[in-house]
Length: 113
Image (tube, rainbow, N blue to C red; front, side, top):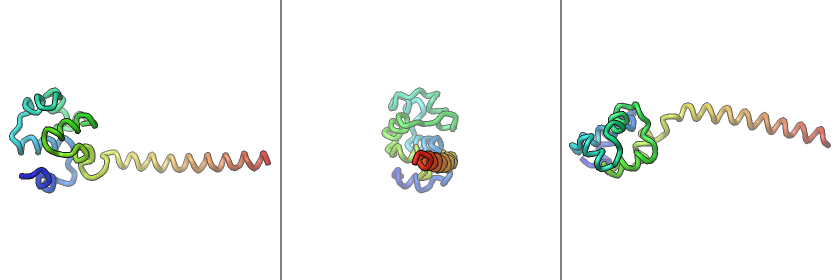
């Protein structure tokens, strides 16, 4: 099965870990073999597959290279960051802060005039 096809069959809520495991098992590669290919310790690979360790850019790049999958597919398994809701909260708070700063700055300019 081609890598693109396998991605199409994975659940929409797949994680980097579940994708890594699915590809590894599809190619009948052991954790030990993947560790040798990538230089990532078996314990870390296991933790990634069990969603106990964040994959990160370097590991996603190495695992992706070994399994023939783009790092982006591992970093953004659903097309967006797993932190999208948190990022949206931060964006909203930042907008409020910037609006308050702009208002405060405008008020101090008016007083100086």
